[in-house]
Image (tube, rainbow, N blue to C red; front, side, top):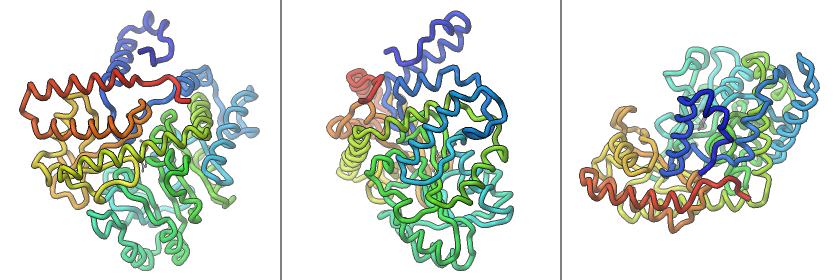
Length: 425
Ligand SMILES: *Cc1c(COP(=O)(O)O)cnc(C)c1O
């Protein structure tokens, strides 16, 4: 079960932290990770991320740095940029954003003036916190307005409403992207509406970047999107980090580079950029397509079980890696209760608001779960169907301690049969 880098020095110098890291390693090994935004990186990614590149200051961009000693950092960042451009088919890439939220913030500031409007997906219909949630500081600077699904049971976006809102409000950015939505978007429709009102199209692909890179979901650039922002640590299976891609507009690319550094960030985390480069290299391999295709098959297999047991799923099922289930509406169990009781049997997922949720964010109606991490462990449809059945058995027996114990034992057995791999190909 040796998944961490060698911890032989840490063990002696700081046993408290070392033990916490080892505890986390054990937790990851013995439970099933169904949080759809999580994954396991390869040992190669882990090594790059834990490398001496963390010692280096590299403010600026390749060949345009503020400090000397950049012969190796320039190699690393240039390779990362070239690989990610190839992966998504675009002309410009910035790999320095520290994570998904900073990538989005840099994009907003690069392309808008304070007071400008962003039209994004309603947060309870799947949009992300960074798309203008009232608790974020961005809402004090920009004006965020919303589009929604026409029908939460099919997941179809109300493109007529989207168009009317765009014509009326004249947003500077139209934002496509989500973290709790299980269907594909019609990117062509976004682009045609944006062109009509002169808006810039930004796709925040944080959750589905790996699925797009592998070609198993549509690429917003193919429909003419201007910009893609993303994380690197979800389906893309890289280190925690962010990135911003520009399809072809050089002016946008220049503004984004300037905003990331020096506009908002200081020195790039070169260890992290090296790990991103390794992850992009892995995602470029043909085997990554097989992985991504299996993520989708596995999610569909789980959805079939939920469907067969009459559990309402938002969007009526899934076309991607995640499922949003209305457990309160279907079983009378709140999202929070479901999260807690599933945690007891070794399944980690998160409670989630559903569209127009009658309940509160801290105890909503839904749960959200997905297959990227268990697919990395080698689960296929058969195991995924079993996990789905065990989940529903757990929820139906939430007060039955012996039954839950039995399920916990079975989950542990599955987890140990599919150890977290060191390498994937
Ligand atoms: C996860 C996510 C982010 C934020 O990424 P962090 O790395 O957590 O900052 C942004 N947008 C979407 C759609 C996401 O799913």
